[in-house]
Length: 214
Image (tube, rainbow, N blue to C red; front, side, top):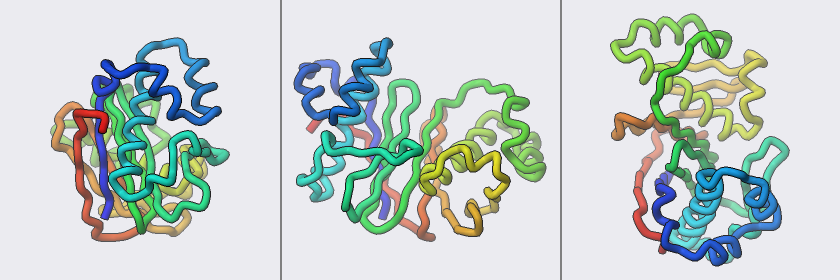
């Protein structure tokens, strides 16, 4: 099972910022100090709060956000943990995908106008045909973009893979160097495109929106 949690930055507005900062690792504190926009600071703090909630709800109280580490490609992880999680954000919304027994990737994107020419080398001709033949071309583009992003985030090597030609998108999966990644879309919100990717087929995916800290 994959659990997916959503929260907006509104949930931290009435909480003391110094208290929230204490949750952060030295790396995240340094990153926070380097942010100039209040919106970016709120996203980082909200992500920390949301991840703390995820850990507590799933029996991982011994893991703390201050222990969070990052791979060379920026994928967050906890050393020696047996569970997996992935983080995405767009606008003022943060999402975390979590699983005890599978590798996961998540991507959420606000659906806004996009210049397709900036991405023409990303997808195959077949995918572009599907996009251009759709009644809602923008949403269909984000359908495939979030699929691609979540797959490379699950893989862990990042978007550099898109230029290598090793990613193939099929009807119900993405193939990265032959490894199968199965995807699950949640299009309940018309303004957001969301895709969860897992290395296991026929996963149960739950979605939960949080409106309070704890």
